[in-house]
Every structure is written in structure tokens, then in C-alpha cells.
Image 1 (cartoon, rainbow, N blue to C red):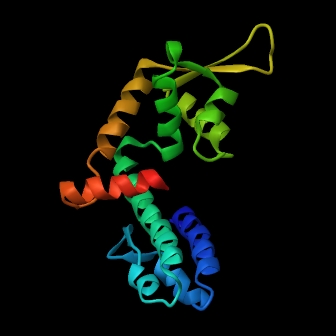
Image 2: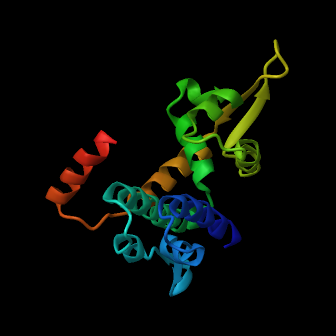
Length: 184
């Protein structure tokens, strides 16, 4: 729970910078609010929509809020798999790598953002027997990570769980949104 609030506070700072005339508490409440339970979060996007900032800044603020809502939903859907998003992304990279093997540095390069949690996430995957670690014989600084069959299955299970997400738009709206997002 604390981690989720830290993530949302980062977005709140971003939105606060965009929406200077709003107070910190208004921005914090706009970004994300607990709703009904600890596992469901809903952004108060109306606060941004009703603000006096220009439309482009509203779009950026709304994108930030929606991204956090979707991230919270992904975390909720992954809970039964006992995988974090970072662990799933690492398994995804390994699943598509030759021989399901990459070095730690190669794995770090596949991450969307430079996550400092890669080593910790890899250690947890080792503990679950989803990956193995092997030091390079020629260069002890290089560590090879290989996905096990259990790890490959865990990746598929995680992807399957995430496929349950929906944006609740019509096909035409989805295609229109997709076209716009490709331009960003």
C-alpha cells in the first residue's frame, strides 16, 4: 500500500507542476484517490478537466492519472501470479531472447525505465526458480540470466492475467485513440 502511494505521489508532483494554480491537496486528490478498497484506485480527473490550465496541459495531466490507474489495475491483476510488473517484464525479455538467456546488463536495457530494482527482482525470480544465474567463465563481472520452464510459464500466466484489462471503449473509439497515441 505504501509503495502505491509513493508512486501516485510522484505523479502528483508532475501534475502539480502542470497545474500551478491548484493547491497541493487538490492535485494529490486529482491524481489518485482510494475508492471502496485498498486495491481499487480511481483518479479524480474532473479536477483537472475543470481547471483553468490549457488543454495540452490537461491532456498531460489526464494521461498521467490514467497511467497510474492502469498500473494499479495491472498490479491487482498480477497479484494471484505473485509477480511484480518488473519481474514480469524481465521474464518477458527472457522469453523472447535467444535460448531464453540475457546478461543482467542486457536485461536492464530492455526496461522501459531504468529500474533500480532489477537485481532485487532477479533474486526473487531465482528464489521462485523462474530463472537461473550463471557467471561468465571469461569475465566474472558478467552474469547470465536464463529463464526456466517454470519462469516461461509464469510469464505466460502473467500475460494472460493482464489480457483481462479493458479500456471500456467501442472499437471505433479504440482505433481513434490508438491513432492519436501513435502520434505522441
